[in-house]
Image (cartoon, helix red, strand yellow):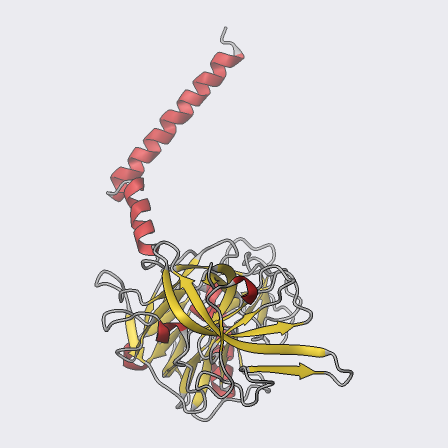
Amino acid sequence: MISSVHLLRLLLLILLLLLASVTLTFEFDAGISFQARYEAYKAKHAPPPNSLVVTRRPRSPLVTLPGTSESEYHVVVGYGTPAQNLTVGFDAGAGGATLLHCNCKPGAFDPSRSSSVAHVPCGSPDCPLEACSGRGCASTTVAKNGAVISSVTVVTDTLTFSPSTPTTVDNFRASCMEMGGRTAGRSSGLLDLGRDSHSLPSRAPSSPDTAAFSYCLPTWTGARGFLSIGAPLPGPGRKVSYTPLRSNAALPNSYFVRLAGLSLGTGRPVIPVPAGDALMALRTTFTYLMPETYAALRDQFKEQMAQYPVAPPMGFLDTCYNFTGLRKIDVPPVTLTFDSGASLELGIRQMMYFEDRDYVFSAGCLAFAAPAWAVYPAGVAAVIGTLAQETTEVVYDVHADMVGFVPDRCEQ
């Protein structure tokens, strides 16, 4: 009679043999081992050298739709000597790095602890303020009752980035703000990636064979993306498509591309986009279109999603469905087509906004809109939000005036 211990050992042995046979069959059929597949996956998603890790701020179930007041994605940089690690958002076209600081609040920059901080004089070309509250480049906002609402002091100090091989930028300008009501969990400030001469890409070392910067925004709360400054351009082994970089006089520090059309699924006519440029946004979640363009996309989407129950709108997102309880969702992908043939195909998480950001089997809305309050500068026909850019490496080759798209570059 076999004891329970011997029976358990026998069952474990049988299970191991079965697993071994499955592994062997998998390796034989695929022609490549699991280890090789894993190494290929790591190589595909490996960030450029000396990249900063990008994380997405955890977000509770939808209460209010995310706006443009605070960045959803963050990196950690050092500022001052010795470097004070600060968690900051990043934006293209912010007009200079802004760091919130308050000596009595954790996570903020404290100028008194830095030996290299310097105050920018009022009237200096480096002072962006129209009026100063003294000899230094500083300004204070006071309420009617005399209480200080906020104050800003423009300083320069040493910025440190690229954690594996630290790179420093001396005399990096920051607008240090003191504000009442700063709450725990918010970022310490905003890092400017725009065309301004004081932005990080403008100040960091670069050459014609490097990108001014590139980023890949993660989808999951726990996933990691990257932000690279001055890294080599994508190599020949990468699938990358480029479109010309454009500019707009109304927003000179921002980056634009020409969006030629949108398509939904296969075999469908391309939806044309009115003549105009598309802003590459980093603090706007959704993609905004002209009313006629959005109406055509919405109508096609509704036609192909007729089998799913409709859900109430979420704010100004008006094309919504309830996927609760389902085990499979078939959604036609949206493809953005740019000048010169470059394209960006959006997966379900890039084209839809879900009530639970980390779970698709919930209420979800088409993440495109044409809100009545949206006013575009002259020559601008669309705004491409961060959701559409997630998991794609967006490469800003400023030397060649091109923007590149490398699909599936960071964790999904």
